[in-house]
Image 1 (tube, one colour):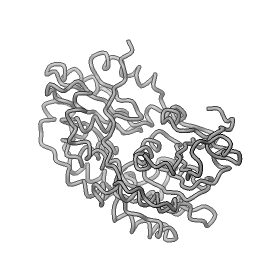
Image 2 (cartoon, rainbow, N blue to C red):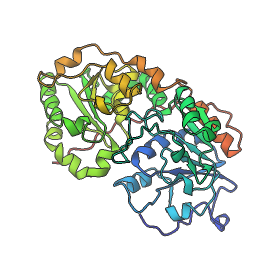
Image 3 (cartoon, rainbow, N blue to C red):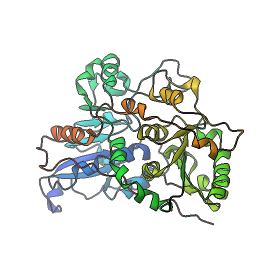
Image 4 (cartoon, one colour):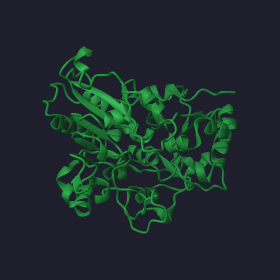
Length: 400
C-alpha cells in the first residue's frame, strides 16, 4: 500500500476540501483481517450520523500480514497511511488488537477479536517457549511506560472484570462489560436463516454441514485435511452441502492461491469455500451441523445452538476453565475411523456455553454505542442501536 499521505478529511488544510465540516473523526486500526472483521461490527452503530467521519489505517511494524491491505481497501473507507495516522489526534480510536495501540492518539476503545479477551490457550503462541500463563488482559498489553493505553476495554463477561483488576489494576476502571457484538449479530440473523441457506444453495431443505478450522498445526485443517475430501464424498451420496470456513490467519500465512490449491479437488466436487473476510457467520446460521475445533467459530456455533462435533481439540494446550475447555467437555468428538455424516446425527447441545460467550446477551450494540459516544463527547442519536443481521455468505467461485 502506498505511503503517500492522503488528501482526506483531516489535516491542517482539510477545511479547503471537505464537504461535511466539523465532524468527529473515528480511526479503525486494522493490523489483521481478524481484527478488522470485528471492528466492522461496530460500523453500523455509527451509521446515519453526519457528525462522525470514519477512517481506517493498517499499522506498519516492519512486517505485515498478507491480505490486510486488501481488506482495508475493501471497507470502502478512506485508508490513511500509518505514518499519517500517528501524526493526527483522533476523537475516537477503535482496535481489536494490542498491536501498536500505544502509538495512536485519541481515546481508545479496545475490543477482543474473538470470544472474549480471556485466551483459550494456557500460553501465548506469540512468545515461543512461554512458561508464564497469559490471559489477554495483562499489564504489559494495556500499558506503555506507566500509562494506561485504552480509555475503555470492552469485556464480554462479568468474569473478565475480576481478571482485569487482578492482572492490570490500574486499568480496572476502563472495563465495560458489553457482551459480544459478533454473537448478538448472529442471533439477530436467526429469523432470516432460510435466506442464508438459499445463498448456499440449500433452499430446498438440503442438509448444510460446516467444517470450521482455526489456525496452527493442531487445528482441523492442520491436523485432519482429509476430512474435507471425506465429507464432500459422503455428502454427494445424500445431496448435502459442505461449507469450509478457515481462520483468516490460514489465508494470511499461506495465501489464497495455496489454500484454494490445497482444496481444489474438494471445491471441484462441490465444497463451498467461504472467503476469510466475511460469510462464516452466515454459514453457521445456515448450518444443520458443524464440525470444528477449539476456535471461535466452533464456540459461536455451539452457543448459537448448532449441533457441533469436534474433529480435534488440543486438550493439553487449553486453559482449564476457558470457553474452549468447556466446549471440549460439552460436544462429542468425531471417530475418524467411521463414516462421518452418520455421526453428525448424534445430539449435541452447546447452548450452555452462551453464558461463557456473553454476560449481556443482545445488548452489546447498545452498550458499545453508548461507550463510543461517551468517548466522543457526543450525544447518542435518537434512534436505537441497530441489531444488524450478518451479511449473506458468498462462497468463492470455483476456478478450474
